[in-house]
Image (cartoon, rainbow, N blue to C red):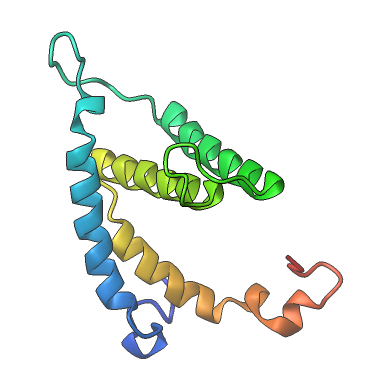
Length: 136
């Protein structure tokens, strides 16, 4: 990846390197736990998963989280937890499964993106205050 700050350890917030390794471990663990979704239940043959469908399932988890926040709901399956909290967890599970199934290294991408965002001009307060800045 190009960029002057990518790979400079001093630019990475504390703990990001450790989180990268943990994210890699969790990706493998979640994908292994979801392996039945990657095989035909009748034949056991591997399935060609539809990437777009899988991404939209992530979006649906986020929409459910938003609905839980909007209505102040508790979760149906884990009633001691807020619906938004559980749906965000579902989204993380779907993201990690997708990454594991398609060989993405989210740990490394996360670390590099944290470095990039730290130095990104359009994320700085003075830039966000401009007429076309990212206000939210």
